Image (tube, rainbow, N blue to C red; front, side, top):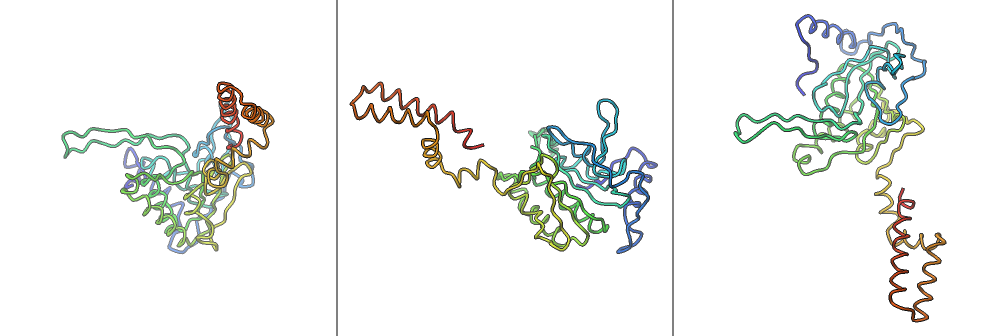
Length: 303
């Protein structure tokens, strides 16, 4: 979280500084340096993810397998990523939309590996590689998100958040590492954001749980606007959790017994066997058939 950009030599460093300055006003509170864009802002977004969304391709576009250019949401070759080596499950940087500089925060959907170096002060420590699930805020990625918001606000940039989070990581280690503090910092930085902010849930993306809470438009209703693609999903609880609360196991089984003809038939046979004092083995067989049928139906009632 210390290095914004990494370069190979001084010339590249100066070039990156000058490029960064081209995204910010000449003075505090001044107008943004709007340039003429060769990429019309009213063009359709050609990059359409099939399964998983590549955040960098969604932002700046990508060449397909035939070499054809698929444009992203922002101007071609305008995206400059910052904090690239830190908290890789979140992508932050500056881009241009129709020549207007903006700040961008997007989400990595793939599992990323975090490399934790060995502690030279402990002889028994060694380098570790820890997997970080995509679409989840961890302490470092939540802090990175909050820091990017703070930087963009100071630079006077409009903010675009391509939201695709399932929530915060809630393990005990994450709590000790300040996941709650990082989440509250995101809320505070959005509350005090002085530029237009747009939250967009892209195609096939989702926004759930505490992730929705910290970027809700009600935090700063005068600045934040909320949009979603038609195939996007969003709720506080994931479907499985909502079903367990609103449609409990007993009610679920009662509903199965009321609607499924096979279950109705099996239960009638079981009742008949009990009234006629049938054999114990026959009753047990019917009971097992009922349980097997319920198990078979369960995915249909919880999807």
